[in-house]
Length: 222
Image (cartoon, rainbow, N blue to C red; front, side, top):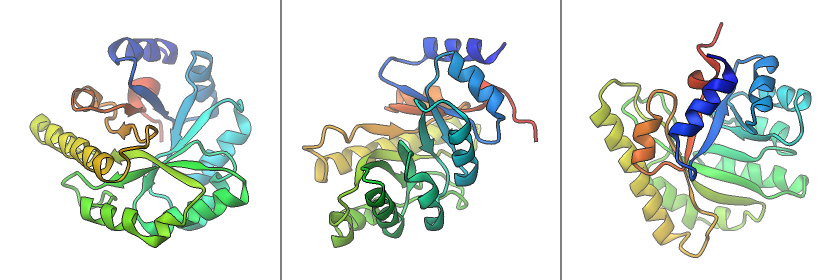
């Protein structure tokens, strides 16, 4: 099955209100073009340098999402064009995004990343850390960013009950933040959770954005 067929199959299995981010990290530009020619316009990368290079090589109507752990010294490379940053996990990163967005006369959309998995190696805040961030003077001084939702990664596990509970946790975090901080902001609507192995569970638990790599491009060739 080729990339176009994979995308077609995915779109048939995913509700219209859920958007697909094609996770294209470590994939060659030729395969991204196959997905583009099949109608895909949203791609996600986890390395700033690789993303910037691909952005230069591919059509300019692609919406690029950054989905990995982002270092503050890499924000400058992304600020001129990035569509959405999924991985805001600290105020210092958010203020850096705001600074570089201002330099480019842009407002950059961002998601707050939460740690919902059992693995300690995954990044993200807890709900109390997010509340502190959103109540801070530093956040309120950021005029060139917009928080549009939340992101989280489930445990790498065959235990579907565990994965479901983690997705439910992220959905609860979204509702809490919506009630406390974003009740009047219609753009706060994104719940980015679910990947190739668990996106169906994620959608059942409220995901509005899934990050799909292997199910579109196949296994990566290292």
